[in-house]
Length: 129
Image 1 (cartoon, rainbow, N blue to C red):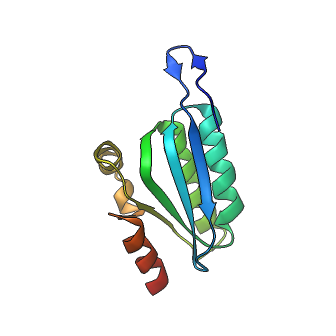
Image 2 (cartoon, rainbow, N blue to C red):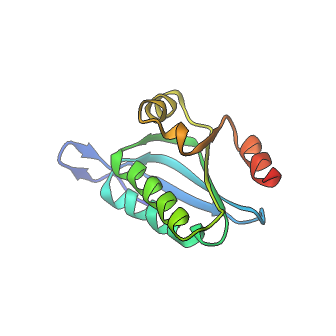
Image 3 (cartoon, rainbow, N blue to C red):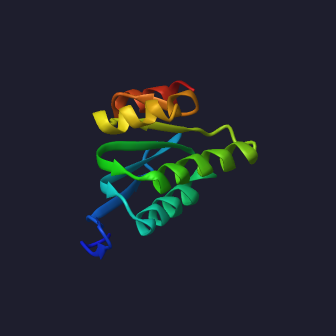
């Protein structure tokens, strides 16, 4: 977790990253707060790396206010590593707010990541896989 610390003009907000491994086919990684620093991106990378070999990943962004470019980079690098290792696992995103949805559309992430309106529909897609 990060406390408010000034980094130039950027404020690092409290960030929580939690992993729920209760579904056998997917790990749900929930991000709460703003992923807006290098340290926050490193925390996300650690969580994704820990679970990317074992299961599909669902990124629950329902409580995520903002993701800066390093956070998106971490997600894409993890997906590339999963594909390079010939894993059948995928990354799913769900519950994006309007800003995150617009940004993911602009960067065309929806062409390479599966996006769902809520966690339940993402879990259903994983279970149907």
